Image 1 (cartoon, helix red, strand yellow):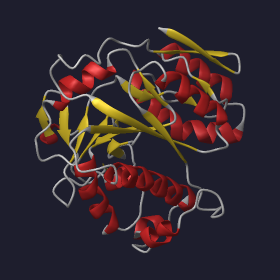
Image 2 (cartoon, helix red, strand yellow):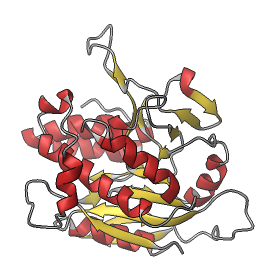
Image 3 (spheres, rainbow, N blue to C red):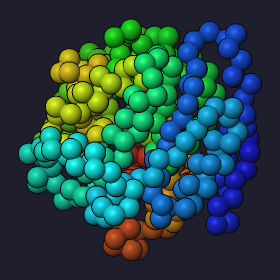
Amino acid sequence: MVQINLAGDPATVPAQEDLNDTSQSGASVKKIWYMNLDSNTKRRDFMEQQLAHFKIPSERLPGINISNRTVHWSPAYEQWLQVGASDELKTNDRPSHVFSVWLSQNAVFHKIAESGDSDDLHMMLEDDCLLDDGWEQAVRTNMKDVPDDWDVVRWNTWDNYRDEDHVKNAVYRCKGPFFDGGGGESNPLQYYYMGNHAVITTPKRAKKLLEYFSKTKIFHADALMVAFGKGLNSYAIKDKSMHPLWDFAQDSIVDPSKEGYKAWSERKTTDPFLKQLLSLVMKKVCWVTGCDDTF
């Protein structure tokens, strides 16, 4: 394992594996794209150092902030936005965030689609995604089980997987709805197949993905991908070799252990804002490690 230090906080990233050998069966990722806001320089440093350990071409796409249309803005974005907001987004408490993420991910998918018409695997990462040892072989192994009709495959999605959506081994169809339950103790709110921290498509298949987005009202990009049978053949891989591990409050990597997350939680709960932030983040990140998200 290679040590990376950001602001004095140690983090481990995988050493380069000898997995670029094409003699091993299964498809390999040919290019990695990652999104990153200009202001998040520590996350950019982390991603650049992490990706440098793999012999795979990578490219950063500056994150789009819809609140500032003078930076990294394209007239094409105005055209994309004409599809309009969903009813759910109109009542959302963070519409600018949703629009910004939706635009940033669309921009990546356009770049992939514009790169040709091949079936080479391209992977889009959010800038808090950690690639564990074995992730390349995990892609090779699991992609062999994905049905040929796939348009997009997402890695290690948040929260729950439905048994009736299981395809084979670690592969699941991302069928809606993306949540159920009323939120009470007898009927708790549960989410399914959420998170776009690691998304795989191809130049050829990205065109289908963009067609779907162009006809679907804007909402959280990950929720929109829970749409198998409704215009998008979306699959999820239940595998933890790629997962987000970012301490958003401190801009440092969190110790990926149950004890580490618990200590992080206890250290932050004195601040009301951070406590609210934790209530959102902990429920998601703890699914990866099995830690207790109550605090």
